Image (cartoon, rainbow, N blue to C red):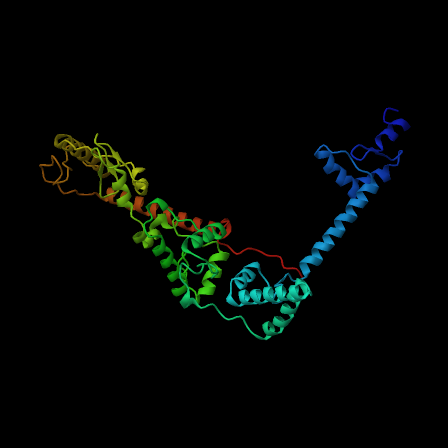
Amino acid sequence: DRNARSPALVLMECKCVSCGLDFGGEGDALREHYRSDLHRYNLKRRAVDLPPVDAAIFQRKRDAAARALLAAEESAAQPKVLVCPISGKRFKTLAQFEQYKGSKKYKALAAEAARKAAAAAEAGEGAAGGAAAAAAASAGDDETEKEAPPDFEKMNEKTHCMFDNVEVGSLEEHVRRVRMLYGFVIPDEEYLTDLQGLFEYCMAKIIGGHECLYCNKRFSGPLSCQQHMRDSAHCRLPMDVEGGERMDEYAPFFDYDAKDAKSGWLKDGVEDLPSGELRLASGRILGNKALQRYYKQRHRPEAPRDPSMRLALENSRAEVEGRMVRKWLGADSDAEVTRAGRWGATAARAPTVFTKAQKATRADAARSMRVHEDLKFDTGMRHNKTQSRYFRIQNFQWAT
């Protein structure tokens, strides 16, 4: 029998190539193995040219992954807080902790802790005992006393950062801090003439006006405005909003004309046009990027028409209309049907008299046209109700 299979063939078929396991002719065991996680894992390893693993190694890997997942879930379930080592206060975010570190109260506590640690070290008690004593003494006060809000009236561009109210030593340190931490970049810095005025205006807009630098959104206070700018990555100037038109607000702190006049690149016959384009000495015009949408337009110029050609066209049109009218009305070939007032129409239009048969023909044609339009309208309305895929009530099958 050609359909009969030999025992050797059956034994050879009951082997998993991906896992390297031989089941000795037990087809049910092989099928059950194909449904196992071990086989799926070895299939993925085989897809990336890795050798298969046995059941013991696979079980160890799965147990390790389960322990790691359980540890990650437990870690995620626990609230993450930051604890100050000096005062013992708890903070939910690193930004709050950094802002607290810049306050005068924290600096005073740190100085007191350092002084007590130095005194304890001199007395032989060690620096750790002095720091612990200072922390224990200030922990009770911090639990009942709330952090005082920053004094915005005493802040300026030389003493505090405009994004997190942290104290800075100078304007240069302020510029370096906002650039490194928040990515605040000054566009066209080579044209900037008043750096202090720019930072003073930005701080007045954030702290005094409670307004975001990038989106101009207003808030109830400076802290909420600063929080919005940090969370939304709006710690920057709106140089890419509305094609750069928002930067006109900061134009008084830049001087582009002085830079251009100093460089001398407009010499040698180059003219700066009011539209922002440049006319070279050769007469060619360099376009402005803001006018790119107009450069892409292609208007077809209208060539002037010859009056004689227009007269011939009008006469030809009148002749064609005359032939159509004569054919429809059944008038004689010699009847004058040109319209008065057209080019070349010199004769007055003769009155047209319809016979009874012509009137019946025109009435039948009008009636047939009305019937056709009514049928077309009714068919369209029916199709809108039955065959339209849009704007119809869908049929839902609700579970009972």
